[in-house]
Length: 178
Image 1 (cartoon, rainbow, N blue to C red):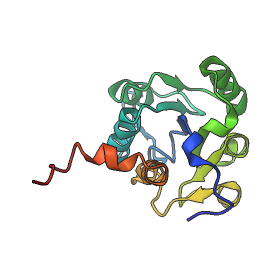
Image 2 (image 1 turned 180 degrees about the vertical axis):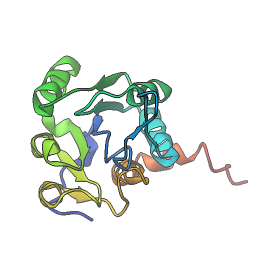
Image 3 (image 1 turned 45 degrees about the vertical axis):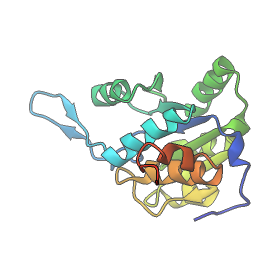
C-alpha cells in the first residue's frame, strides 16, 4: 500500500536492499561448527534478475557480515554488496557518488531502525509488512508480504509495472499470440 504521495518511479535506477529481515525472514541459524545459514526466497531472487534484465542496478546493504549473504549476492550477480554497515547512510551516499546517481534515482527496502536514514534519503522508500512501526511510518510503500517471503519481488513488480517496464519483461514468459 502506498503511504505518501507517489514519487517519480520512472527515475529509479538503483534498488538497495537490506538483507536480514528483507531478503530473509530475519532468522540466522548458527550451525554446530559456527557456520551460518540463511533462507532466501526464490521469488525475490527471480525478481532481482528481472530488475537487472530491465537494465537496472541492485545493491545489498547489510548491518552484519555473513558468508551466505556474500554467496547469494554472487549467485544473483549483484555487483554492489556491503556488509558490516553499522551506519548505512554514509555507505549509500558513497555508492551513489561512485555510480553518479542522485537520491531520487534510488529505491530502498528495509525493516528495522537502522534502515530509517536510507529510507528517508532516497526517492522511494519501502518497508516490508513485518517491519517495525517507525520504518513503516516513514516508507512510501509497505508490502503485503513479509521479509523473506517475496516482499522484495512485490516492490520490484510495483516499480516495474508503474513505469511501463513490465510488459517487455513478460515477453520472455508469454508466447506471442498468432
